[in-house]
Image (cartoon, rainbow, N blue to C red):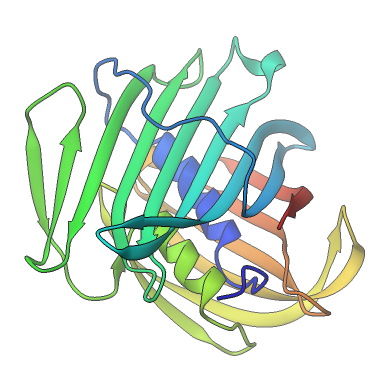
Length: 266
């Protein structure tokens, strides 16, 4: 399957990366489990998040192929959300996410989120949580490293973690104006039912200038903001390869915009 099919996903990944990093649950300190980004086969996307015109976060996403478990070929999707050094006294964020999915179906096998943040504006959190998707037994098992505690959740069909959802629409699905995309996403905290609506428009891109684009838009609640609703808009170029160039978040406390700074890989 070609890694050049870019559709729905990058913006969703970033959105949930922030959302999961700022959720209200706090755990005790845990050791790091997700390895650093390594050179190799895959695609890499780098975004900068701005608020009030000031750069506040950097997001790096990498899709890797070539791994396998029990004879099944797998993709791995890695994401890292980092705050800039000059903001560390207000909030230091170094959150990582790793999803392992089956190549044929993009069904989730395992999802690991590693939260490491603190500062004047964010609650101190440092923990690792692993979700195992047990399809034969229709359950999701959630574990925290360093403890024996386990939680089980019902696993229905078409349920994804945030990054396996990204893989499904990035690698398999096409995107057209006028679509309604229904998704069920479990992040270890809350099951989210979301609907994205698509439309055509124009957008200014830092990399490509003004371009024709398709926008996916959805409303969702934010646990960080007492479940108040906000809106996410994801913009993709329509000429040539479909590239997610801009993500806009209308949050209950203000707007955040992600701009694609660079991309690379094979």
